[in-house]
Amino acid sequence: MGDLAVGARSGQDGPDEQRPAEPVPPAARDAVPAESDSGAPGPSEGDSGSSGPGDGDTGDDRAQDVGEPGRRPRNQRSFWKELPLLIGIALVLALLIKTFLVQAFSIPSDSMQHTLEQGDRVLVDKLTPWFGSEPERGEVVVFHDPAEWLANEPVVEPNPVQRVLGWIGLMPSANEKDLIKRVIGVGGDTVECKGTGPLKVNGKPLDDKSFVYAGNTPCTVDDQGGQFKVTVPKGKIWVMGDHRQNSLDSRYHQEDKNHGFVPVGNVVGRAIVVAWPPTHWATLPVPDTFDQNLSAAAPGVLGLAGAVPLVLWRRRRVTGRTTAPGGVENSGVPGLGTDR
Image (cartoon, rainbow, N blue to C red):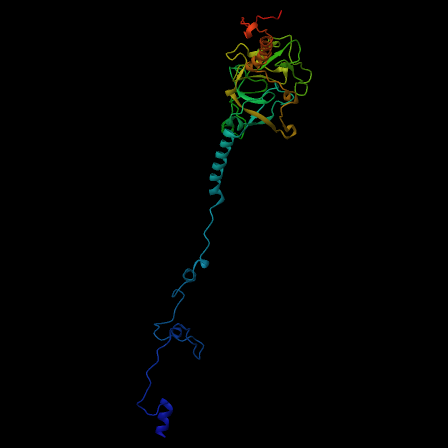
């Protein structure tokens, strides 16, 4: 009976022969302890006690151990923190556009009616002059006051906001002394007007009914400057307002240092569009009358044109000379021969 008991307990042939203990695999050590018969989890071997809420890895620690997908998303920068940077970039871009591309100007008077009305805002192309382009006949241009043309005109003092917006080009500048007129003649042109018109450029009359103020004559006989004939120097332009009887333009400044002409260097740019108010929106093209060939013939061309007939006439005289006996030509003073 005892042998049977021993054999049943040990599972071996004899009481003294026992197998060495097998090592516990790591998975078994990390396994959750099995619940006891009472339902409470039993402590694992080597544990000093039950674990509480503060013991072991927290949820955040486990998320960090897993890797980047478990991390909290980084907070985005607030819109209000971004706003100053956006405003700064917008101001810099506006300043660059005003300096090199387009600038807005306000029309302060009626001198360009009805092409431009008082209070209109025009956009002026400032880019093409950077590439060497110069004003052409028929263009509406903005230019800096060449010789105190606006000396007696009242200047509205802008408030600080208007100063800033005018400086960056978001509003027309209130303190710049600029004028806007139409180019009638460029360097080398002869511009004249006698009686009540028509206005002529290099002897060719302009059909200006499409842009001159209704009821106005191209020139006048009852005021100083209404009758004129001028030749535009190189590097200058002759300008006139479309409201001929209400425009102090080149005609009325012939006594200044520039004799009424505007230096090309004073030109800011060409007005290309009426941008405000929306009801006045319109482009500002060159009138068709300026498309005719108005250019003055250059002195060299005129000299060449006059020299060609003279040379041909002289050659006929030379070839028509008689030859003296013995084959010797008549040697005479040029211009003397058999022609009578």
